[in-house]
Image (tube, rainbow, N blue to C red; front, top):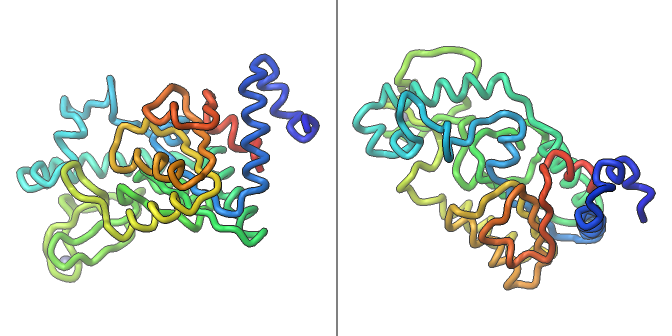
Length: 261
Ligand SMILES: [Zn+2]
């Protein structure tokens, strides 16, 4: 059993419990026909995406909670769109990491054996899309698109090229906003339904790099467990969901996920 993990065994030889948990999780990944993975800011932080939570998350003295709201945008659309333009410019220089590519490989493996896979992302950076994951729900929306505040037309944004701010809709001239879910806004009911049914139907539910403090996303793990899924948590620290997990793996996603497929 240890042989195929030889490469990883070296890395985790001094942590036998973690090593054992990786082997168990890998066996689940090889066996389960329905796998749902919830991914959070931790996976993106590993490749350098700022998380805007905790210390150091300020922009010009403002917290994300002061900028990513409908009220902030209504008050000062230029300031809010400037903040997003800077975030997107930073993202243009960041590539998906080993964790993202490993999830894409896991998806290919599951679908190749006739199973179903869904990535439930709490991240807006689109790195999982760029790594090649094709079945995903962006619960909190995506920075890859802008949406017109009047006609709801959406279009892809080129992170690398500057444009006039605040951006305006080419079709109707109204202000455009990023297609993300702001503080105080509801998740898309359609996206939530997809995520909840994948969690309920999953045999294996894996939470990666998510602190589980944001509801209702955090309740997906409980939903999966209530419907009989085996739940594994891969995160650097304990979370509110840890007590529900069959196994908790305290390690970077980018070090563990590539060992699973
Ligand atoms: Zn429009």
